[in-house]
Length: 140
Ligand code: HEM
Image (cartoon, rainbow, N blue to C red; front, side):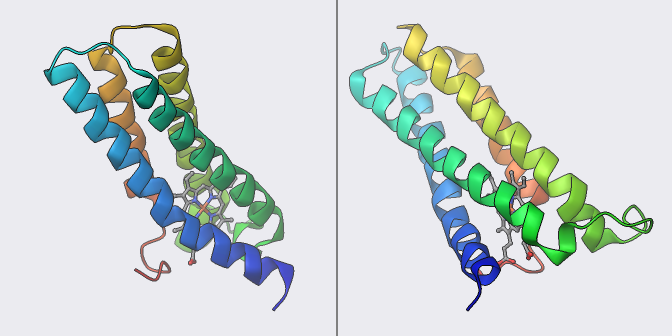
């Protein structure tokens, strides 16, 4: 197996962890907001670990972007649905999701009260991911 195939498998498998971590963070934030609790060390740990999981996926995705035959730019990129997904839509939306989770993490680290907007931002990150996962190719 070449490096590209190994990385593709890692990126594909890690995606499960990314989604589960984001959902878990969302549930934790909902619990803290509904019970009006202040941020604890455990919540900060959950948000930090989630951010790390996202950043690892971002790194794998960025390297994959350079290696994948599907993300190459050609004059037909915008006309070809699959090529456009891997070259533009998937990376952009996933990058937005990583940025949102990073913002939430820094807000949880900074403030003791858990803000409702954090929950909205995590929900948006999950929506960005679910919208742009290549479902046709992903072995669930
Ligand atoms: C952070 C959240 C991300 C998630 C959950 C995610 C998820 C996935 C999934 C499920 C696949 C399909 C893998 C397969 O075919 O089995 C995929 C493919 C791909 N992803 Fe991501 N991804 C993320 C971020 C990124 C980023 C930031 C980039 C680029 C900068 C990227 C670039 C790619 C490329 C190029 C492929 C196609 C690989 C190929 O089939 O050749 N991904 N991604």
